[in-house]
Length: 433
Ligand code: SAH
Image (cartoon, rainbow, N blue to C red):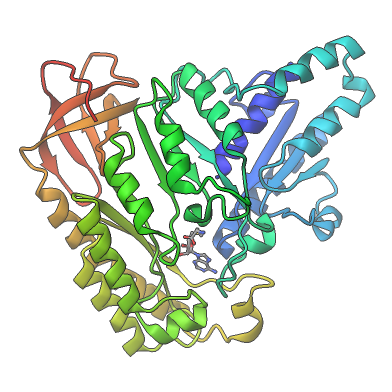
């Protein structure tokens, strides 16, 4: 979400005549986009913003813009006092305050006609920042902003505001313009992406939105995330199975495998419900890969309850598990009303146990790809090797002198590990899924 938001800010700044630089020392404007989902992310964001202070002292004309969840939708009044060297504070997904600041500031003001001309450009499609235009193969498109679900541990609803869906026409216009700039794959984003359109009186829902996006010529692949077990409908599953451009990969977090912990988290489903969901997904979307998220050490989580999460992961054999240690977040129900009573070392022990288990599972699943031919969409060259993904979102590296960026090529898998695979190009380029 933040990557997509940052690209938007970059794009808006270029419309104002700014150019990208990779060096903070050279910049006239620095935008720091932030995440606070766990304390570690917040610490990192604060550390980074303080590291910018010397630059501001050296160059008083430098504009520092702090953006994202550290600021939040309420604008971060307390932060403003704490960070006097920051010029502009922007909520998540909103380049507005920065643009207003830059265009109002007299020393930087453009003449009226020029301002009009540049703003006119902004009303249309999304133009990627120059340094990634024609380079970016896989782009993220936010479709649902904010979140109104109140998982007790989660700070996102407080910082990103209430759930709101973006109009389908806007999303489609954006996808079309991204494709015209070389993008081949889009990932539609929402905190609970399957709730897309629930705030519209008459649709479309996510399944219908996928059908619309599917019609965009030149677009090869579509993904979406994150799903919530209670909203991932069978209509949506069937749509994924039916539409060739929609990739068979689902991100649907379980968070815990114990019913009491799930209830304390206010997730709204039981372990049994989740098992049934996974079974249905596997029936309706054959060959689908599934990723989940898990939090260990939630307040009150006993060893026995943790063991149930462990068993769940061992049973379900999902492709990916994003693991996190519980981190109390300001303002959330769990931080206010529940004691963070699992010691740090114990959280770490549980984390490592799940990590080791998932590593084995992932290695076993990936080993089935050995010797198979799979269509890989290549994104970029990293340390001399081309990096791409299979339809099931597995990372594949291939050595090749060809320019593979944005191409889908058949690859024979020659090595597999838990986190990635290696392969060799089949001779002919074949344009299939
Ligand atoms: N809305 C999405 C993404 C939420 S943030 C979803 O519900 O999946 C991504 C992940 O961070 C969550 O799935 C959760 O596993 C983790 N997370 C959120 N709040 C957390 C907290 N307070 N402590 C530890 N992990 C947390």
